Amino acid sequence: MKVQLVLALLSLAALANARKPLAARYDNFKVYRAFVEDNEQLEEFKKVHQHIQVHILHEIGGSNRSYDVIVGPLFQKAFEKVLHDLEVEYEIIVEDLQALLDESSVDEDAPMDWETYHPLSTIYDWVDDQCAEHDYLECKVIGHSHEGRPIKSVKLSKREGNKAILIEGNIHAMEWISSATVTYILNQLINSKDAEMQRLTEEYDWIVVPMVNPDGFVYTHEVERLWRKNRRPNGYTNTSGPCFGIDMNRNFDFHWSGAGWNIEDPCDHWFGGDEPNTEREILALQDFVSSFEDGYIRAYMAFHAYGQYVLLPYGHSNTEFPPNYDQMMRIAAAFADGAVDAYGSVFTYGASGLLNYVVSGAAKDWAYGVKGIPFTCTIELRDKGTFGFFLPSNQITEVGTEVTEGLKSLVAKANDEGIFD
Ligand SMILES: [Zn+2]
Image 1 (spheres, protein in one colour):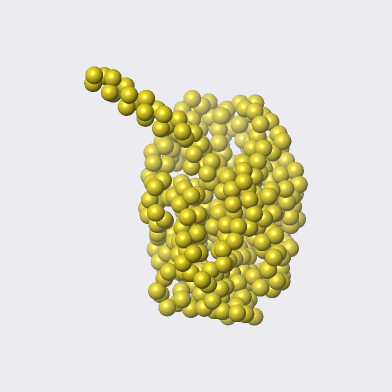
Image 2 (cartoon, rainbow, N blue to C red):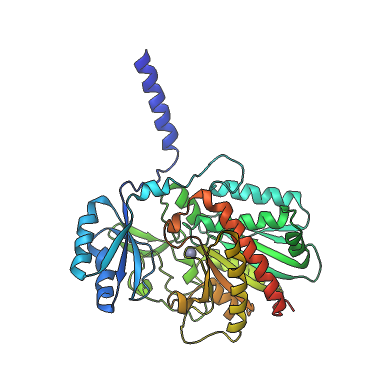
């Protein structure tokens, strides 16, 4: 009897598991940090994936910088040999990726909070609830993803004639801290009793798109935690079959061209498409931005991870700078000053082509260069590489707090600088 009962329970459990796709696990996968010094090393380093199964976490953007690479137990010896032969220095920064991923809790059933990461349904239910409760919120589905999921937006406006600040999140699927932070900010704007937050909602309109890439986000929860792009089959195949997805923050049309590996391998995580403006998610976002009258949206902030940067236009060049670059630098400095006070997190600021690497197709460059929004940036949230893309859930509230402090300071400075005039 007992054995039968156990067997019955086991098959029940198997049934329950069968309903959901199994998420990939990363037991004993290591993360290597490889320092690629010169172009000769870089050319060879680019080819590593052709014979060893590796997942490079950083877009290949040049030499004299480090790249984090995930390698499974089967390939670690071979990978270390390649690095050794190329004389590329490296260190192992994560011994067991699964253990690191397990530090982030995901609660499938809990109502929305900022103690844990949540699935898309919880985030969207919370957005819907806020919209139902507050009549100064205007909530709209701005379009649908490739797989048909809604892309939701919230516009907060308490006064006629205000100028607006737009915030978008999670265009990159695996950067969970992005939508967690954007919803944290939205919650502060709606529900905080803090006098300054309330003033910010009286004097400015806020437009929030918390989840630009819902398909990719669901995929990171259900199948592959490390997914970055959307989920549209992109028309290419490799040895594993059809390739999915476009890096949507490389698909905006401003000085667009495939940079770096973009051109070489369309199955890569940062493939920006064969041409710009091909993805329905970003077209929905662009149409939404364009639906407002010119001059209404005065600041555009895209939230990403990681590295603690305020990245300004331009991305396509490190020698050409926006006309009001110095002004944007002062505003970015104000964000960094506000943010550091909370927990000491240092944010570095500057043009992305200069600080990061030259790459085009990002939302902030389109918002500045095409839409003429006078302050635009990408905020790269915590941390500086310890957890990288997989920031533990127990840091969400601190990140939300420091960014909210940064934002208060940024808006005050932008106002002094005449951005909202
Ligand atoms: Zn990103």
